[in-house]
Amino acid sequence: MSDFTPLTRRQIAWRAAQDVADGAYVNLGIGIPTLVADYVPQGREIVFHSENGILGVGPAPAPGEEDPDLINAGKALVTLLPGGAYFTHSDAFLMIRGGHLDLALLGGFEVSETGDLANWTTDDPNMSPGVGGAMDLASGARSVRVLMQHTTAKGGPRLRRYCRYPLTAPRAVSRVYTDLAVVDIGPAGFIVQEIVAGLDLAGLQARTEAELTAAPELGVLSAPDLG
Amino acid sequence: MIDKQVASLAEAVAGIRDGATILCGGFGAVGSPDALFEALLAQGARDLIAVSNNAGSGRRGLAALIAARRVRRVICSYPRTTDPVVFEEEYRAGRIELELVPQGTLSERMRCAAAGLGGFWSPVGVGTRLAEGKELRTIDGKEYVLEMPLKGDVAFIRADKADRWGNLTYRKSARNFNPVMAMAADLTVVQLREVVPLGELDPEVVATPGIFVDRMVVAGDLT
Image 1 (spheres, each protein chain N blue to C red):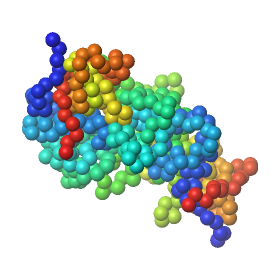
Image 2: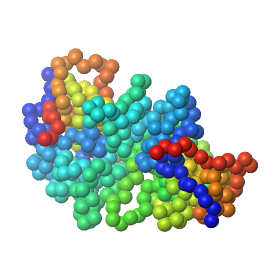
Image 3: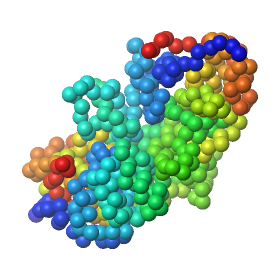
Image 4: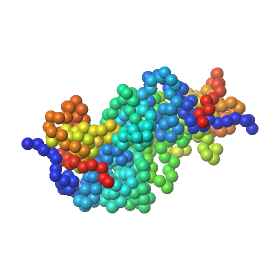
């Protein structure tokens, strides 16, 4: 067994943030994607969208600066950046569905080799199901990228030929960032762009159900120590 | 003279019938007209259908109505929000029905009803469980599902300021579902922070014109 170090959740978010273009309008899903806002590279102006009706979402408020009427879609208190705007919920989703949003970075349970995404329910009988804006974002944003662990807690694959869990949207995802690799979805399936040092394609394949193809210039997935 | 302000919370919810469909403003607890829910609890209407993004936080507001088993069915996108204790308990016990709707489809169905339209073709949900049994159509090579309008008998709205004509403003993200719900019900009832003299609201910042508003009452946060 080779010796390698998976990325932390923060490092996955950092890696995804490096690919967000200057000027992009972006929605961040709950979980690892929320952390992306902390790692936007200097010099890039990125406008974060929130489903409840905000463009220009800023960081969490400083103590004493909280406004109970200003939350994001995850119900966390946030701030509004200069240039930000409030609007009604139906317009927030018009932006999503109408293809006005450049990018949605979402969490996932499973992604298939055709880009199908499953991220809304595991059919756990112990809790009520909830879909929120997951289907709108997955089918509407111009680009959908998923941030998740490469395998389940038990080591099972999350990059699969077909999703086992109920779909959020078919043929939606173009790229997946995991703790082990950056993987694109192309017409012929999964194409590995980067793998963490110490793990080779065969090692990654052993942790993936669907067949992987290496990109012509396979890179090393690395991120700074973020504590 | 037009004056939509009523004297009390009891008057604001008077006449709401058993079985009514209530559009419930708010996103989580923000922008939720909790005082109206509690007034409806005292009024006694039951067998209600609640249309809401979430299914109530803690034990106040919509959660109080659900806890008292006045709500037969919840139509929402995400029942589990901050502290969803009441809904989860009722749902697990099989005492409440849940209709799950993608979040943007929820507001667009109401906008559709408000606009007098008979439905719309949405790409959201195609190829998933939530489109099962619904009509599909391919338009310009893309698949869509038919979504039907969703109208309320009543809308419970939370706004910031209003004048006596019922022109409304909202605060920050407390706007959320309130403007679309205010347009989509036969009876729109508003919980307000403040009423200001006619002419004092900047017409450029009115987010809900008074034509959509029937009753309003000043009430603060529940304590």
